[in-house]
Image (cartoon, rainbow, N blue to C red; front, top):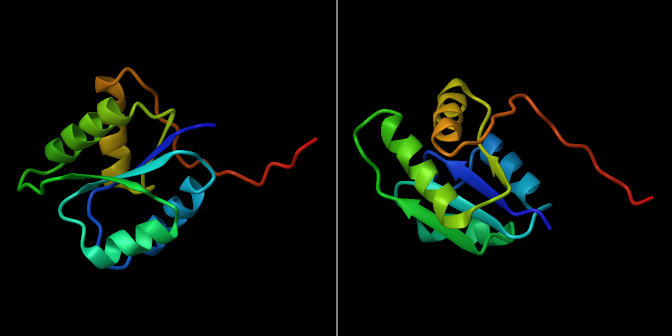
Length: 120
């Protein structure tokens, strides 16, 4: 089955709507790993576990803008070697995805969505 990495540049105790959508999508893949920049609280870990996420990578927060997130995503990709990486669809994360894709010899697809696939 396809492995997925979900990347969050920050994660509060309760995921945002966009983060919940990515976590829901990640449940279709196995294994699914979440990488987060910054500390992840115990309540947030419980929420992730509720989505079936058993592996969480944490990078320390930093004051730099985007460069740190790109480096954290690149490290997570190197560590997990996923077949699919999911990020929020906003200008910040699209830029992070593009820079990390260049560093990792990958590609980026934006504004994509999945629909249920039924067996033949």
